[in-house]
Image (cartoon, rainbow, N blue to C red; front, top):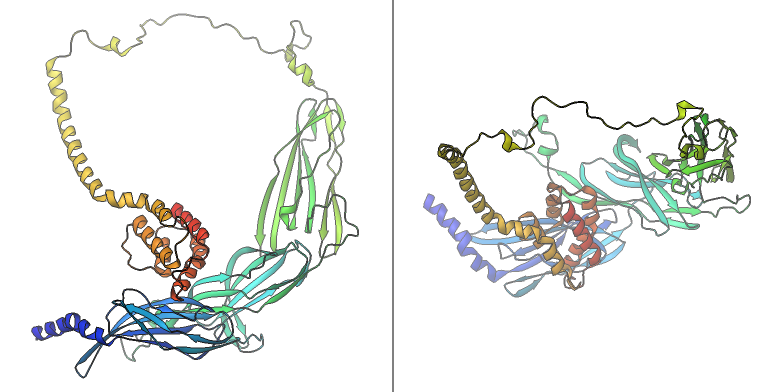
Amino acid sequence: MKRLFTSILLFLFIGMPGAARAQVSVDLKLDRSEATTADSVRLVVSVSGVRNAQSPPVLKGLENFRVTPGGTASRMEIVNGKVSAGVDFTFYLQPQKTGSFQIGPAEITIEGQRYQSRLATLSVVTAAGSAGAARGELFLTAELSAHEVYPEEQTVYTVKLYRRVKVRDISISLPENDHLVFKQLAKAREYETVHNGQRYQVLEVRYAVVSHVAGTHVLDPSRMTMTVLEANRRRQGGIFDNPLFDDSFFSFSGGRPATVASEPIKLKVADLPDAGKPADFSGLVGQFTIKSDLQPLSVKAGESATLTVQVAGQGNVQRIPDIKLPDLEHARIYADQPVLEVSQDIGGLKGVKTMKWALVPERAGDLVLPPLTLSYFDPEARRYRTEKAIPPSLKVLPGRSAAARSTPVQTGTKDPDSAPPVKEEVKELGRDILPVHTSARDLMAPGRLMPEVWVSCLLVLAPLCFYLMVFYAVRTREKTEQSRATLAARRALKNFMKNCHGGHLGADGLIDAIRIYLNDRCTLSLGALTWEEVCRILKTRGVRPETIETLRPAFQALEMAVYGGRGNEPAPDEASLIQLIRQVDRELK
C-alpha cells in the first residue's frame, strides 16, 4: 500500500508537470456581470496545465478600477485517470465610475510562450443613495454641520460607516480639494443605532473643515476601504457546531475587500463683510475671549511684576494675534515668548494663547496699564466684535533705582543694612597632626615587589585570560556568520537609492527594488511582494501605523500599474515613494 501511494505521489509531482504543460489554457471569470460603485467584484484568472507560475498574469481594461490582490491557490484534479493541475489568481475590483467595461484579456507567459484569456463584460451603475431607502448591510454617509460658512470658519464634516457584517483593516479616503483643509477631531467612536428598522454598528469619524477661499465648493464622496469577513459553512452536528465557537476566530475563514462611498456635498463660503471691519482685524474667525492678570499688585521700584494675558476660544485658533503692549513711562518691559495650546473635541478646534511680560518700574507711584483689545469676526452673529481686557494698576513702593543698585556702597553710608557683606581673607588656623600623603607611592612599603607576588598575579589572571580568549573566538565566529546579513541590512537603503537612481524604473522594477530592500533590511527571503506582506512586515518591525497608511496608496498604485499591463512605464510619483521608504527605514527596528 505504501509503495502504491508513493508511486502516485511520484507520478503527480514528477511525471505530471511535463504532460500538463502541453495543454496550458487561461480563463477569466467575474462573479457577476453587473455591480454598483459601492460593490467589490471578484475576478479569478485560472491557468490550467501548470502547477505554479513564475509571475502573475497581466490584466487589461482595469484603468477605471481599484485592484486588490486576493491571493494565489494551486489545484489538482484526477478525472478518469487523467491528472490536471492549475493555478488560480484572485483579484478584487472596486469600480471608480459607472459605465460598461471590457475586462481582459489576462496574459501570462510560461516558458517563453504567451497565453491569453477571453474578455468579460461588467456593467457598473450608481449605488442607491437615498437616505430613506434600504441601504443594505454596509454603507457610508457624510454630512456637514453647516453648509454656509465664511472663510476660515470651521464646519464639522462627519463620516459614518453603518455595518451589519464583521470587517477589519478599515482605511478612509477623504475628498481632495485644494481649497479645503481637513483636521480630524478626537478619536473615532463606535456605537449602535437603528436605521430604517435595522440595527447597525456605526463607526463615526469627525473632521474640522476650513476653507480659505470664498465660493461654492463640492466635496467629492469619501470612501472607506475594508476587508469584509466571510462566514464558514460548518457541518451540522460537528465538533464546531457549538455556540462556544461562534466568534471571529472559528466562524470566519477569510475576507473580501470592499469599498463604500458617501454622497457628494456642496459647501458655500461667503466673503467676510467690509462694513464694521476693525483696523486691527487679523483674520480671526470664531468666538473668543481675552483676560489679563497682574502678579503681584504691589512691588518696590526696581523689582518686577508679571502681566499675563490669555486669549481663548473656538475657531481658527492659529490666527490668534500676538497682543502688543505699548511702551510705559518710567518702566521697562520684557516680553516672554507667546505659547499657543490647541485642543479639539467633537465641536471643533479650540485654543488658548498665553502672553507674558515682566514689568520693572523705575520710580514710586501708581503704574497705570493700558487696556488690551482683541478683534475677531463672530460667524453666528455675522458681525465683528472687539473684546477688551483692562489690567489693574501696579502700586510701586519706594526702592533703590537701577543706578543706585549698580553703584558700590561707600564707607560710612547711612543705611548699614544696604551695604554688601565684607569678604575676609582666608587664614590658616592650624595643621593636622598626621602627615598628609599626596601620592599612592607614599603608602607602599619600601623594597621591590617579590617574585612570589608575580606568580600569584599570573595564577589569578590566567583563567580570566583563557575565558576572554574563548569568548573572543566564539564572538568572532558568530560575527563572521552574521556579517553578511548585518552588512546587507546597513546598506539596504543605500542600495535601494542606487537602484532608483535616475528615476527610470517602471512600476515592475520599483516593486522589485522594494522587495530587495526589505529582504536585505529585515533579513528575509521574499520571492514575490504584495501589499499584505509589506503591511505585515512593517507592523511587526515597529513602523508607525500612520507611516504604513501613507505608504498604502503609493504601493497599491504600483500594483495597479503592474496588473494593468503598465509595469514597464515610469512609476507614478516615484520621488514621493522614495521619500516614504526613507521614512520607513528610520522607523524600522
